[in-house]
Length: 343
Image (cartoon, rainbow, N blue to C red; front, side):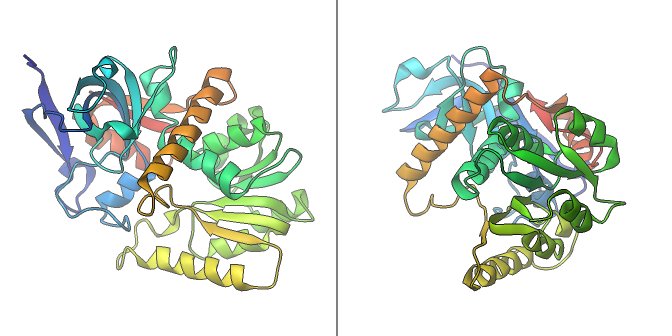
């Protein structure tokens, strides 16, 4: 008989971090095709920061349990699921629900974590690693010898992007506040202080012919500069609108503007390409294909982690009960990597 209790963090509405609610209950049972995962690590990504403000473009109605991804051990399996999966450490990308001690997930959506990779380490490269890998290899299709610009090179996605790009033989220019420049230089990145330097002018000095790809999570008007910095044949991958995080008004507006720009740029007679990246793209059309692609790509990311091509960037580890502190830290802009939550 399972005597464990469920602990969840609820987002009741648009609240400050201290308004997040911790609730207790019974551990749920797995239904057909499902598993119950005992969470070992989840995290605070930019998506949850937007959800707290009601700004994530397809978030569910309040109240709900946030948590974009998680790593944990399979505690129980439902009908139709191989019982031998119990005790296996797995990762899952779920969009919401991860900020809980126990989470129900479709068995088809879990990916086994390799032996020797810790839960917190793996957590830093689930949504961040999938996002970085697919943008680099499925959208930009980077090649050795190219030059790319990574905005927010110290962040959760940015730090993984930098390392995966360098592992592929690509030179990286990265924007970040000056406090992160020494770390970036140690990794071979050419840093630019987006607060005090003219980013576009500095990139043109470093890459007079333009860069082969730009990875832009900032959005807003700055994405136009990102497009203009591309070399012929270059690719812009926009994957967020951090510049509008604290804005009021429609949460769909910033995304629709980005999509409009992407459509217009791709309609122009030029050799450059633009994408708005959404990690969930294609799931509605073919769930099986989406799952197969995610499994393949996350397996590649975990292999890169095992090889040392990328290292886990853990900004801090805090228990679920200190969720307000964890969210404030993640939103502070003072840390490198990901804030990880533990049971």
